[in-house]
Length: 236
Length: 233
Image (cartoon, rainbow over all chains, first blue to last red; front, side):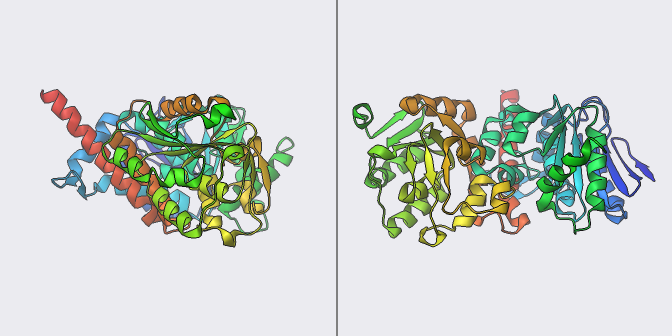
């Protein structure tokens, strides 16, 4: 089964659900993409019987994140602020986006992100909401929101603290610097680096390995799954 | 030793307060001055430099608790630069800071039991090193000793530095992470992280994410308004 929207599609194959950001080359997270992702999550993915989910981007990149100017305008028009500049009403669109990202984090089935090329801003936040992140070599990651005057807000700050600790998370968010896949792995943000041509193949193998495991799936065991799978991957 | 002990205790360099902690009182005594500088937007980071070889750091539980509450809600990035043996009260102090920069001779000795520590030790470890850390999931750091490399690989320290050049190392690090961001922007980001410090990572997820959303909206509206004002001018 394949549900194809303008900027994203969901496809079920052998019990695995593929969520593909489909706006190459950069796979920008436009308003249309975010609305469609929410629709896909609420109306299809949550009701599907898939046993695991792989999130990836069509073409060379995972996603280069949201359009900053458009985001500023949209949020500012939707938010109500008081005389002190404090928010009275949060923009509905932001809550909807956060809910669709958190859907993946909160899911009890394995969710793996297959990352290639640029995985930046909200793109990285989506990947951070999956339970396991596998990076193709040569990938570039980062949360540059602070360099545009704001802050990652689709649970990126929290996921960074959970994965790499307060100090490193602050460093990543405050500096907004880009980093390589190897640096991301040292920071605890990604779980493995493979050849960029094999990224999706590796993720599919890892997903099948997890699903075949006799013990109940736990997202807290992500590193153990990757470690065990690496021992058999070459012969897979 | 002579060079280290000759340093002035408290000064401002590149918009950061640098405080040499020769003893616990040197931190407590400057607390009002630090708060005043933060309030007046004179500084964007607070750095404490501490070499355990020359530091006499003993604190009562009440003093530790007072300092912990202060640091937990600290509105700008707090950084401790430390070297040599770090255990007991110095370790507790180091764990109250947002960011740790360690000298090459740093050795961290974790306590035998967590009960003597003023804050929730397990919660603080997962906050500082990430609750997905391999090590924390499989073992505990209690009674363990770590050298600087091990502390770095566990994300307990952000960077290993040349302690003889501690001030410049701290300044370069601050420049790298803060760039030319204004104080309101820095404070908004820190507010979001202080929320995690306050609630702990095991708190309800929606509750944890509230501050991130709040600061995001405030910053983005502010940025949009600034753009509009500049455009209309």
